[in-house]
Length: 114
Length: 115
Image (cartoon, rainbow over all chains, first blue to last red; front, side, top):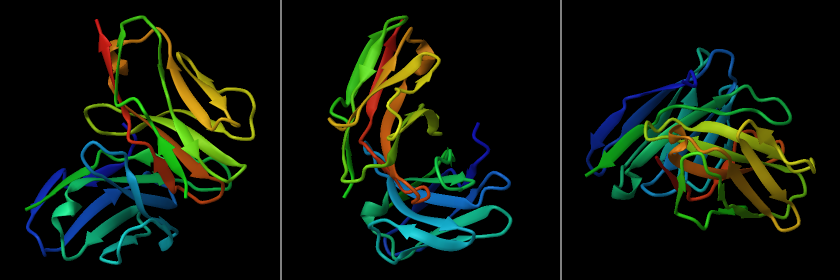
């Protein structure tokens, strides 16, 4: 166990809907990252939050947004869902300082868009 | 842009034997970090081993070791004395220095351990 939890485990939505995925980081971790893992692929970086501000973004459109809260929880919001958004969404947290920071992953949320 | 390539979608190994998983990457940076992550069927990604590019010595963690060839941009993972619990997807990942947790992952290698 990594101490990082995600909810829900599975989710089914229809195209055009909005979805919110949640992540609870380890206590003290100031950085959370979100990844999208399509079936048979490696995780793709969506964005990162450091001390509640977005601090790095991958090649994802603005309809992917996030929040990080002081209580070590965070959210990933996706608007106007598309079929290609079907994937496993992973969050990862760490206490970031300069240098190597071990990143702890959650178990993921499996999102299916119909 | 950084890319990470794992050319072996699937590998298998007999229990107690040794297996090597391959990874190559492309970068113009001189300082960076490389990682191997394990994703068991339960899906929670776990760090196996990491290597700092400025270190010439190959990293080792118990039965896991890497062969880091910086000039060739190659980073392979060797698993010795394979165990049934080693069966999982293995992802190679790259991270630039001081960019927080923006990792670039390969497409993974599915490792089967045969009893």
